[in-house]
Amino acid sequence: MTNTPHLINGQEVMPADAQTAAVENPATGEVVSQVPLASSAEVDQAVNAAKEAFASWRSVSLSRRVQILFRYRELLNARKDELAAIITREHGKVHSDALGEVTRGLEVVEFACNAPHLLKGSATQNASTGVDVRSGRHPLGPVAIITPFNFPAMVPMWFTPIAVATGNTVVIKPSEKDPSAVNWQAQLWKEAGLPDGVVNVLHGGKEAVNGLLTHPDIEAISFVGSTPVAQHVYETGTASGKRVQALGGAKNHMVVLPDANLDQAADSAVSAGYGSAGERCMAISVVVAVGNIADELVEKIAERTRGLTMQGDNPDLGPLISRDHRDKVRGYVDGAEAEGAKLVVDGRSWSEADQPEAAFLGPTLLDEVTSQMAAYRDEIFGPVLSVVRAENYDQALELINSNPYGNGTAIFTRDGAAARHFEMEVQVGMIGINVPIPVPMAYYSFGGWKHSLFGDSHAHGTEGVNFFTRGKVVTSRWGDPAEGGLELGFPQND
Ligand code: NAD
Image (cartoon, rainbow, N blue to C red; front, side, top):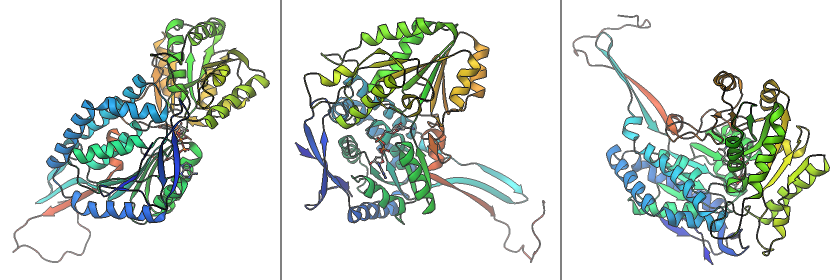
């Protein structure tokens, strides 16, 4: 067992009197690490390190910054298996899925290597006689990045490379449930040549987060997590005068129209519903079967669900993050059954498998779920797929648009006009057409609508660059010093 200390100004910090939390491997229940929970003293220490580093980092040339990013990209690409192993040990997702997470994070690093192009302003000569105007973008200062347990490497990489490339310094507070991936990344930044203090890792829970939200030297906050915490972060951070983007929870619907290829739709529903044990903010948790295809679709999904395994050398999915969370998810299955949903595939027996300390729950399929049931209303965040039956397309659209979340959604159809209507009318930020998990590429921006995002900036892409910078516009005139004279009126066009 090891410790996962804070990393502040390039140094490991593990105060002797620190409160700590145990980090478990959810596949075995074994405690693999102890992580310190920061008090306000460590919050100050981390923010001060970021503040001091900002004084010089903001002036480091773009070409030097980008050289470090390229080195980081090369190191990460060469050693991504190491990072994936850390993710699997603390989060539980299977190795191939962990590698996929690292690869999607790597895309953001590659995007951030474009910083010189992304930060290019515009210029106008002779906007008025002898007057030139130019714009540019400037870093904010020390920023805080607060991330959830479910993507312990990728979500930190949605923000850190862009914040650093655009000249900011960072205090990152990963989830205390699987914190070691961010320490590994911070060590890699150091190896790539990033000066100490530019990326600092602060561990902890609520107290550490609240300390960052109100700290006078933090300029901006990027948060990803559940909706109630996202709302709290947004309200507290903005009340303290900070720029905040807070991405929240989700309930993603996949609509299957009667003309869809049902085999393709069933494959997609199973992959997107049970991959990573359903612990993805873009997981499909509701399949909306439209019209008379419901029985056939449910049968196709059930057949595939029964074929999934959590054992052997090549499991399809791993355990949930903890036994507590596993029990909560099981409770939703119990509740749905009691409320009248039809239990087509029951994964609950997995939780009594040979390892009682592990947090496994088998893939579970519920049919005839209604919008009144708790299993529909809440974000379950587990391997539970609910089928809601809709009479027609309009009913399916109305169901999605009246849901408080608006992260991702998908439609499966062969009808281009129906797909286009869906794209235009659905109140959701990320839409898939015959694509079940429409996660935008790094050069687009990631984010939902409604209760899935507080603030108005999505993550990465140009919105990410704008979030971590602010604009300056310079108007200049280099006339002959002999010219001049008073002019008290507001300038006219000339
Ligand atoms: P969480 O909200 O419990 O925790 C997120 C972060 O906030 C962690 O760093 C945690 O330490 C901190 N935190 C927890 N409770 C807090 C409190 N009361 N006050 C202040 N800080 C607090 O989320 P989680 O369980 O780690 O992650 C799963 C959630 O994240 C799901 O709801 C999922 O949908 C969401 N998520 C959303 C996206 C997205 O892009 N919208 C991406 C990934 C995950």
